[in-house]
Length: 300
Ligand code: PMP
Image (cartoon, rainbow, N blue to C red; front, side):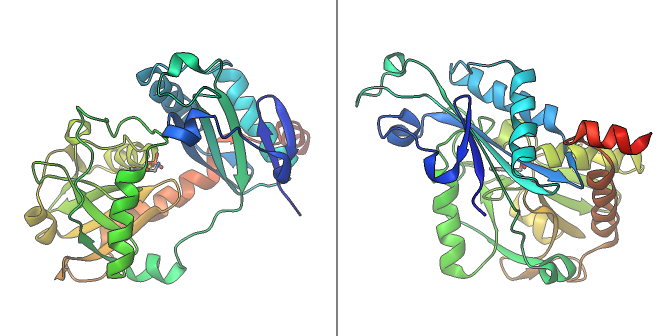
């Protein structure tokens, strides 16, 4: 069955969900987006994703032509119309239809699209065994050129890194910033465990402030870990006890080898495994209900 897609106030079959070739999202990658996930009839961290979308839009001076409340409702309604309880949701707000020049002032109003689909995961065995990664030559965008904090439609930086990963046969890679500090993966944040410390790069080195990253930091603090946002290098990763990546699509995935160096024991470590379990519980038990009425009725 084909999907129902939301586009500019209408819910249409996916074949009819079309954007103009004059849309600056298409012509220039001028726009912002979010990747959100629903588990077990609830949307995980919906408000946080909507806030990040509006922050990204604000940074590029893009006016989203609807309120945050309406945007949340649009996400929920799109999932309902597709009859899903577990889903991957893609919200895209592009600059809209303009002329062939760069000037965003020529674009009358933003195009808003919401797509929901079933989620495709890394194979389960990668979560059980952990992934092997390498660092890539492509450096993450400089914060003063195009801040990685903006989740923009310009993902070529990440795609170039992904191409390096594909050529070398790795499922994910580590990106460094121009100074050589570890920043993140192509679509995930990175954590290392060293002794009793759980360390992830701070925002200012040039990362997307991941929503999964924030959830993991919170859970780890509650579990009594010493959680730090600190700059680190490849050397710190090679010599870490544990390493893992976090992201909406990947969730938490252990990393057991970096640039040919085995991390810790070469198997997913105890801190990583405990956080994976805690995250699973969090995603199953929290979030905005999609089918509010049905769930309320069921509770009576
Ligand atoms: N970094 C980048 C570059 C990403 O694209 C993503 C995925 N949105 C992440 C990190 C992880 O962020 P989140 O946990 O919010 O999905």
